[in-house]
Image (cartoon, rainbow, N blue to C red; front, side, top):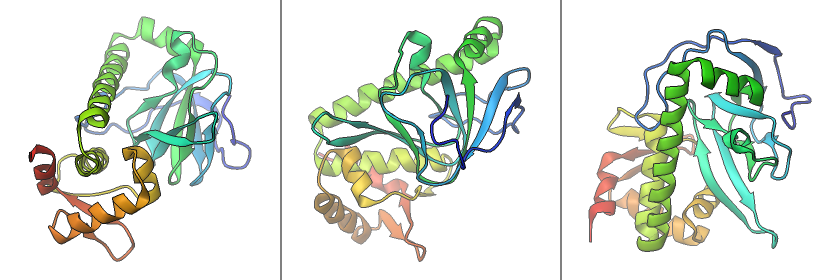
Length: 235
């Protein structure tokens, strides 16, 4: 089951029916959880949901908050492979025969997560066409994102990779607005996601701020403007 659910986990297995929300372009369609047995678990910030190497037994879904997935190499180097906000599944490898977690899932803020046991998830995918379609949309979207990430790493400069990462994070947080607040992320975390150093991230963030692409707020957060897209499309 879930790791670090000792003092942080709240709730027991129950029939969940979270409120419906408008679908976001980068996320699966709105899900109807009626009749699906899931465990609702609340986590504090910086809690480990599961660790790399743990046995797999469930698929998880972010109801609220932000979760990051990171991988630790044998040499001790950590890489952030995804930052997930409300509306994202993760841990679905167990459905394809994966026996151990390939990444560590950690909350970046207080978060509420649904955990669906593997057998329950398999049953719902077989018997609930609408739920299965929404899950398939999620899987295809993630596959497309992974391809784009790979191409980004292979062919784009550090500046363009950082701009794309900021826009993706901001779009997930607030998909419709021209100015989008970014989930609270450190420059160290951005460096891990982009594949560069903190000093390079700091250099480009200062450049983006001077150009008006990024606005820093009083509470140490910042807002991304859609004009940042010009960095990606420029030669």
